[in-house]
Length: 231
Ligand SMILES: O=C(O)CCC(=O)C(=O)O
Image 1: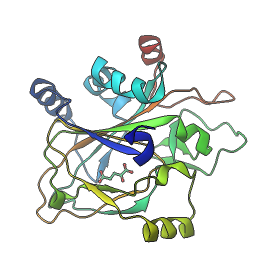
Image 2: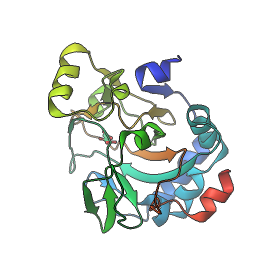
Image 3: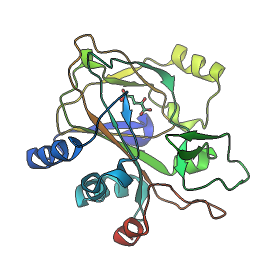
């Protein structure tokens, strides 16, 4: 088993070129951020949508998920003096879908920014990865993300299991340079603290899936074009 499957995350250095970074920064300038995250960027921003299907990112996703991958969600995270947040240990358990269609093993359902979200069964999340593309440098004290290695291999965890993981396994903090990409499994326990010296640390978080959804459910941000492009 390689390191990514063992640990549930991996840092890839200097993946995104300076030119691409400038292009992404320019494209994101049109959006106002009023909280920690700016959602639905695959549908709201054409540059981000195209970047998510760029050969270098698809190659990273295919290496871990197999040949049929589609980008299904993109969020921009930032921490600044005005919005200096932290998140406690959690797994990423929800996906965004076009509409609510009851399915065995799916739920609870929730709305975020007017978009239907749902917790799918663990098997769906096990066929996904997220790429965290670092648009700014993110040093340890700048609210870098931490992971509990190996915690992605035990399905969805309840509160007691999360405490047990924290007690038995030392977290690993994962600072990154501008242009680096952190690959992570949605089910890995992760957290990030407030920045001690907050400066922009923009992270473009793009999720990829290797399988469709059952029973007529559809990924909310994946368009027909994405699917035909990547198969
Ligand atoms: O960017 C971060 O620090 C945390 C992001 C996060 O919690 C998540 O991806 O679920």
